[in-house]
Image 1: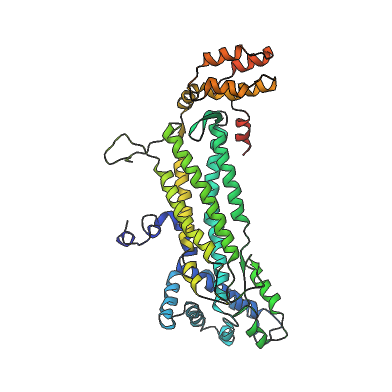
Image 2: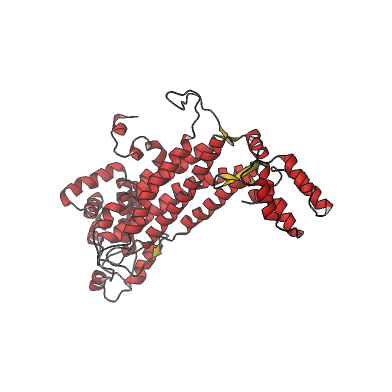
Length: 455
């Protein structure tokens, strides 16, 4: 680790720097400035391509290619140059506008149309579109793939261990058996639903001026359909156009996305805690990694640290994401600035979410089921067969079946022999009595194996 990493205030930019690299190009300040440049250039190109706006002439193929190149090749050094201008302007978007005019100052076509750079725009036209693009990229290129890998590993577990019987625990006490694969399938199914909810959020953006009414636009060209033009512009980015806004886009779909992310993280926290317990119970062993140390004083320890790390980071992510979803839709009258500093932390919510998913995946990769431990647990809990026995007794009209099995089993251990003796005395058809006598805790798994394979 470099000295600069050691001095990082946030572990995302220090200890975990390399683990969130996929997000840095989108959610860093450089990523924000780069997105602004992309939007600003796209707006200039759109204006120049519109025949009805006669005062700005169309650009030649060479100029269009240069504009595209400036957007595509925008570098961290370019970002530094924008920041130098901001030191004077004390306004980040205006600094980007000045940089763009200087960067293209040699191009006569662009200079002839230079006052159409940032034409009729408020900073939030550029910002809200940039933020939506950043969220779209971060979601599709980092978050969804990370969740997809976790889901894929869980589905592999579900199929691999579909028929491996496992004692359930409700309220921490022995309960009707399941299979290890079915429990992994449960987690996978929940995360699939949560991932799909994240993927389906339609991110909105606006491009309608200072307070959302196209005031300046219509002052310049009163007979032009600016709303339709702006709609086409926003939709060209694959975003949803929002016609009704104040100075800012109201961030409702952002809140929807952050809520969806937080829900997925909550499901993952639940899973990490359960798997941690299964490791503690010995249902899973953990593969050893050469050189790793589990404890500074207890050499035998192999700790489930990846699931603990994941749980902690999912929790950190949710603390930020929940604040985003509660705060961002609120803005005093037509605009206040409280959203600006909050939005600069979007990468924190994404960073801890992706970091947590990566830790969870690493933990899943170390797990090995211990069939012998699972079997021993089941064999010590014959009382869980009280449920099927009393249910069959109900079928055949035997009085007070629940109460009889309660008296026999509640709060007591029970042996296989004692249960079979009880079954042998039941006045039920022979084939059903024999079926119950052959049942074991390991065979009493219902449709668990089938359900595990279907996820």
